[in-house]
Image (cartoon, rainbow, N blue to C red; front, side, top):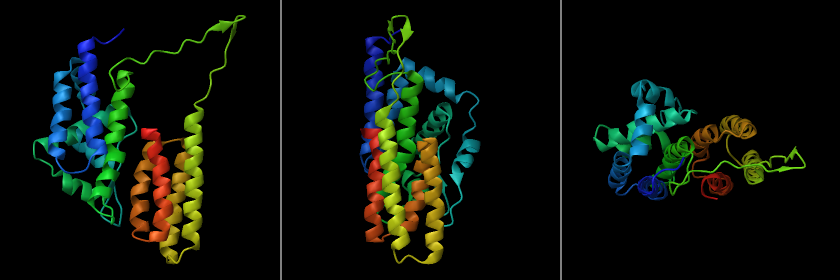
Length: 255
């Protein structure tokens, strides 16, 4: 089964609109959201997918579940693990902003605030909300960003024996790099002049990230970097190693 060529173009337009919002800044975000929503409405494939995931979806309940208490700025926001719920939740969020029922800038400041400025806060929002949304659509459509279906790999038989399936070495290497950069960050924090209580809290967050890396769960990792960044604040020496860790995380989405 293949999507018609006209649908490929429409699906590509959707992912282009998502990438524009992910890679951009807050400026003109209302126009970028409108492009995403328009692309969904214009594509029969996307429209059917979104209609399906929205069936019986309870936005207010899922929105509350996504909020996690955080004593630093009131809370942070973590999308669900299921692709269907991620798509439905983020779509409803974008719709709320488009209908002016929610202020995006306030939402970003409330749940993704960074002392480094609003553009960094918006980057946190993009990494934690928009990227999982885009990836969830890719997964459920089983397609590439140009709208072409991902062909199932066929393993050829040789001498009536199945060839072994190669593991995803590239992803394993990226998780290894993530672990090394986190080890360096933890070492710097423990040697720094940060007060004892803050060090203990940072160690708790970092240990939780280590566990999430073991599970290879990027959703949990993305959620935990927000309180981690808050705790680090503007400590320039520690911030350097944190930025290196975050860059390793970004590689999962843009490599």
